[in-house]
Amino acid sequence: MKKLGLLIITLAGLLPAQEKKPEKLAPYYPTPEIVVEKMLQLGELKRGEKMFDLGSGDGRIVIMAAQKFGANGVGVELDNDLWKQSSEKIRSLGLEKTAQIIQGDVFIQDYSSANVITVYLLPTSNDKMRPVLEKQLKKGTRIVSHDFEFAGWRPEKTVTVEDDGEGRSHTLYLYIR
Ligand SMILES: C[S@@+](CC[C@H](N)C(=O)[O-])C[C@H]1O[C@@H](n2cnc3c(N)ncnc32)[C@H](O)[C@@H]1O
Image 1 (cartoon, rainbow, N blue to C red):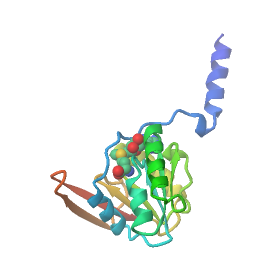
Image 2: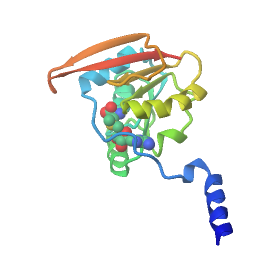
Image 3: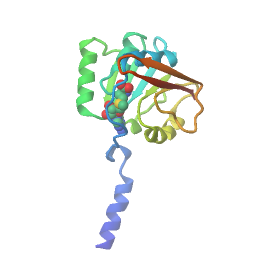
């Protein structure tokens, strides 16, 4: 019996990352549109560049990246309803060629082609994402984080955005790897 338990534990450890239960890194809380625009401006997102939004919610960052900045936007979203909703919005706007949402876990994607990464997760989530990004990102990739810093990285710029809609200010951190 003890041997069987040991075998199960060993096999579980050998499961590929994709089969492990994804961790919910933050609740859904959308970035106001005015702040989305500032994030993409701060990241100096250019036409034809590739950007990823980690935990893309209703897809607003990816959609603006494609629509207003002419970039190729990819969102990664764990929640099935949000994935569906954002994919439908992209289809209805005719942006399928330059915007897409992957339904999945941010931990197991390939970000090596990214020019810009946007993030609105929690500080502990940034701690967990940091080694993944450090391993994968090419030199010069810009990372823009909404409200929460990446501990251990020094921001190139820190910007505060006043948002009348929510009545609070938002802090944006720009990192260049
Ligand atoms: C604070 S919201 C930000 C949404 C969007 N990026 C924005 O700024 O408007 C965080 C999002 O991350 C998603 N999320 C949480 N953990 C995730 C994971 N492990 N993989 C993919 N998405 C995740 C949540 O479902 C939620 O939609």
